[in-house]
Image 1: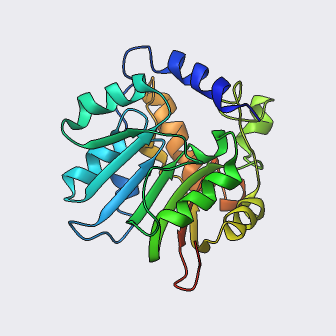
Image 2 (image 1 turned 45 degrees about the vertical axis):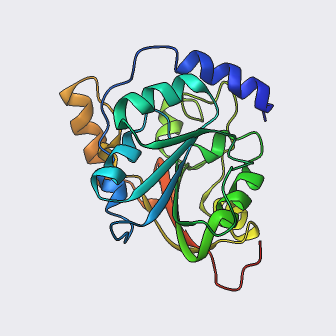
Length: 225
């Protein structure tokens, strides 16, 4: 895995470019039962797509990223929302201070993913919920592409299968309650044809071979921080 310094250098370059294409993160918000006013933390918030939807839904949303260029893009998107520069392994929030935590396509790129999962558990209130999107090592498409890993694998990437992610999150103190496919329409598509192909594949490929899992967890009331 990369060091935190290497990750910062990589993401400084990644977010120095103009903002990426618009993504639909409403479908992620629909997966959790969050009442307006609930406190939600987005770890690795990127350009702020999910934060934007959370704020629009009336949630008290906070985002963290490890580099300032990403935070600047997120600030442009969400205006006065709360943002902080921090590594996922050292979140600047009190124990049990969040009702929900989202970590969408970020945990696998942490310098220490296991420590990041422990931080998610730490900041969740008892019975609080986490929603974590991570890549599947057994994704069927990578056999045809003759590679394995996402576009960010060049810096650092932990690839596990479904049981591997369950084991990592359970060891961190989280109870896995549901696993589903990543919503297919959260990615930008350069062409209508590719959008049709991806949508068809999303519906046809079984969960065990899907591209990314969305793992919903809870912090058990008895979990100590």
